[in-house]
Each structure stands twice: as structure tokens, then as C-alpha cells.
Image (cartoon, rainbow over the protein chains, first blue to last red):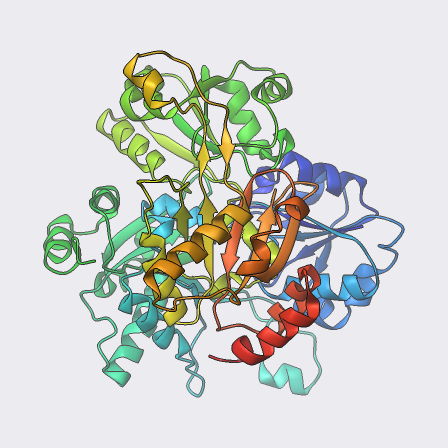
Length: 287
Length: 287
């Protein structure tokens, strides 16, 4: 049996009892370590589980899945995923390859940022499609998120923006030289995300949002020190210090909001007067 | 401290280790038992936790929250919620009341149907706003879901439909007579949901969807015997036996689909030829 086990969002204690039982009984335990990260190190997981954990990077999951699936028709293999196993698309692929080999698959769900973001006080019923934001480079500034946000906002919905992480990245030089030297991991912050969003709006000028659009920055959701900061996109550009360590996410508000959401979220506002003013002018009961 | 603890979706072993620790140390443990249910009984939870669990019905949470919050400024109180604590809006309200009393609040997230539904193979990035479907009566047939689905479909997105549950309901006669006699619980099935959806389309005739629209029925998501059935809305009207016991949910597909979703979901199709034909005609790469 191939088990896809969600680890939740915080630390080693966010695994479910069902998930832990699977980890303990499996012949091999893999940890998917490139679409998201826990707030704790692999060695902490290993000592908590009492098991060796094999790090599975993108290359292994996408190109060497046979290795992961080996023997899973007769023994148990656990594939651990931060959050919920079906948050990222890569794992759908792994299940399809297991199916081809007639390997049975079971999933142990867990918290995902896509539902845990409800802790902002924004109602999950009011979210449209989730988008991703990647680190821009001089030559690569993908802006499809802009069209997705436009679609969400056209029907009044909030947008959860998931932020890029870069682990085990090589410089072009090291790739060319085939040197397995990896850059330090990078995690996009709310400030970087808000500023890239404004950059694209300034370029396109289609008014999908602006500097005064309300948003919530979230850090370490589900962890003991989770932190939320609410403000305009402009205010959030400077809120990284307030938010602290990774992982960060951002929610851009839609206008289909409920008074209860306002009451809950304003508690996190950097400038409550500003928040109230903009809410009243542009958001309250606009649906 | 008030702890909102998610229980996940299946049975007593779906609580996280962090959540179980909270349950064990809390002075009182409440179980919210009206927006969703676990697949196991309260007594099983009690023996698994080694703790008494107090059932909190809607009346208690909405009108007697003071009782729940009593003493939570100096001791720990656990409020258990099936799925993730922020899936339903009621609990936002409880947090706001705790804030008023300066009671600190912490959340222990867990799997929610809103993310676990990814186990259908439909990508969470392609979901629009979630809607609810209530049991229609002769005089009450709320159809706002129809407009929300239109919005989602207008931008190509899938819609998760959460199905009504009725627990501790009284007949009108028993309410009038003030008799605390409760009807047996009822859980809406995928068949009932699909048929109510078609009923409203026939009434409104606005072409938001039709009998041939593709959908996925899901039962007991996250449980050991979770079951998915894919087909047209018409086919799903008759799929309750195939799906089995509650809880059920339904996903109406949008057209912004990916070939990988097709490959994954067709495995669940009641009639694979029909599924392939409709997919090819109306869904494949329509975005």
C-alpha cells in the first residue's frame, strides 16, 4: 500500500494519530520537501517518529517515482506531504503511477493552508480560486495570477495567494558545470508578494486592484506563533518585520464580504482607522 | 485559553497529536455536533481520549457561549470541531466573544472537506466558492447556490457543494408544545443534491448546468472506505447505493480542467464511455 500522509502545517505534533501509525508500520518513509516545508527540521521528525525519513526532492518524485513505489504492492510505503497530500498537483501524478502498477493507495488527510487560512476570519465560502506567486527575475515575470484575481474579484471573492519557495536551487553556472552545489533556501515574504502584485498592476493598468486594496498577510499559519497582519497592499509591502519568519501567505479581499469578517480581521489591521475607512467606502456589503 | 481543535473527517484517530494533548489537559471538552459529524460515536471519542466530552448543540454555541467560555481566562477549555475549526462560520463568532472577554484563543487546524476533496483528483486551484445545499421542503427551496455556481462556471471553476445535515430537529408540533423530542438525524445524499440541482435548473431555465453536466459524488472522504463516483448530474441522481453511508459531498465540474484531472477522475466514472464523450465535447481545454 502507498500511503500519502498529510503532516499539517506546523511542527512534528501536527501529524494525526492515524498518520503516525502509518509512519511507524511502513517499510520506507519519504518526505516530500520541495512544495512546502514544516517549521521544524527533518531530524526532529525522525526522532519524534522513531524512524528514518528519506528526503524526496522534486527530481526524485517526478523522475524516479519507481524508486518510491518499489515493493509497495506487497509492503507499506509512506509518502509524507506538508499540509494535505492533495494540495499540490505533483502527488496526483504519483497516485496515477501507483494505479498503473496496481498498487493500492490510501490518503491520510490533514490541515492545508487552503482551509487553515480561515483563521484570518475570512470565510472560506467567500474564496475563489487559489493562485501562486513566483519570485520574479529580470526576464521571467509570469503574471497569470493577475487574470485569475480579476476573475475572482469580478464575482466578489477573496483570493488566497500562495508564495514561492526555493529549495535545492542551483545557479546556472553550477547546473552547467554539473556541480551539486545548492543555494540557501528562499521563502517569499508577504512584502515581496504585495510589491510584485503592485508592479504588475502598474504595468497592466487594468485596475484589477490598487495600492488601497485590502489584504491580509499570514505567517506560520497553524503554528504556535502564527501571525496575521491586515492592511492595504501598500501597507503590506512594509509588514515583513511584523510578520516574522516564513512561511507567509497573502489573501487579497474580494467585496463579497460579511460584517463578521470585518469585525474579525480589523483586529489585525496595521492602521485601524485606514482599514475602517476603506472597508466602509469600498467593501461593506457590496455584493 | 480557549482551544479550537479540529478533529479531521474520519474517526477518532484523525485528531492530531497536538490536538490530543490539548484535549487531555483541558478542564472541559466540548464537541460541536451540528454542522458536521464524525463517522464514529461520541462514546468512542470519550474512551479514546480518556475524557468526558460535552455535546454542544447549536443552541448552546449560539446562545450559551458564556457557559463554554467560563473560566477560560485562567484554565484551558477545548472546543472540538469536526474537520477544521474555521470551516463553519459559527466558530468565528465564538472567537469574537472570547476576544471580548480577553480570553486568549488558539486553533489546532485539521483536514477540512474543503481541501480533502482534492482526493477526487480535481485540482484545488480550480475550485471557486463553496456552496451549501439544504433539504428542500414544499415551501422552502432556497436557490442562491444556483447564482454562486453560475459565477464559478462563468470563470471555468469547479464548485464544491456541501450537503445539509439535520440533527436534533424538532417537528413544528413538538416545538409548539415545547416537547424536547427530536427527529432521527438526516444526511443529504449526492442523489438528493443532484436532483434538487436539476429541479432548480428546470425551474429557472438559465442554463447554468444541465443533465449532462459532469460531477463527482464523494462519500466519507478521508475515511478508510471513502468512495468517489463520477458521472453526469442525471447519473448521480441514482448513485446513492454505490456511494453508501453518509457523509456525502458533490463537486460540479467547471471547464477550466486539466488533462490530468480527467485521467484521475474517469477511474470513478459510472459510465466511462459517456464520461469520455462529454469530457471531450464540453470540457477538455475549454479555458
